[in-house]
Image (cartoon, rainbow, N blue to C red; front, side, top):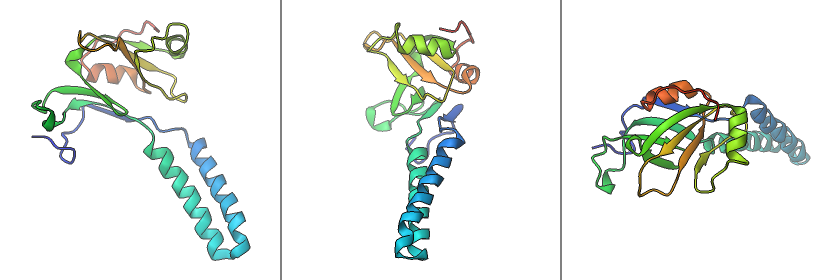
Length: 170
């Protein structure tokens, strides 16, 4: 049995954290908080600066989605817990419910989020990640036509999901 605390190691795992410049903005906001807190003395200024910078950095990191391929599942849902699954952010789908997959470049992402978008699709997108993978959903019970997942390592994600690499661009 697999629990959230004793989850087996993933075949693929990636956190879509933002670039360092975002954390630099957290440091700048901390500096501004320190400046505002300096009215009440140096101890308050340091505390305010550290609290704001650390808090903002923690929020940015905590809200960065994780992409993961591996065994797992919720044992309470009646599943064996050993089926291989894809997790992107807060959504999870068994790999058996996914069909063909392809790498998508920046232009393809723009099209799939724009003129070729399907409102029923599941999208895990971060603007600072310029490549993605598109998985077709083959489960007839699922109205979702495809998953579009941004990733910095599309070839490794496809390999971990057991899909051949097709870099058609969209």
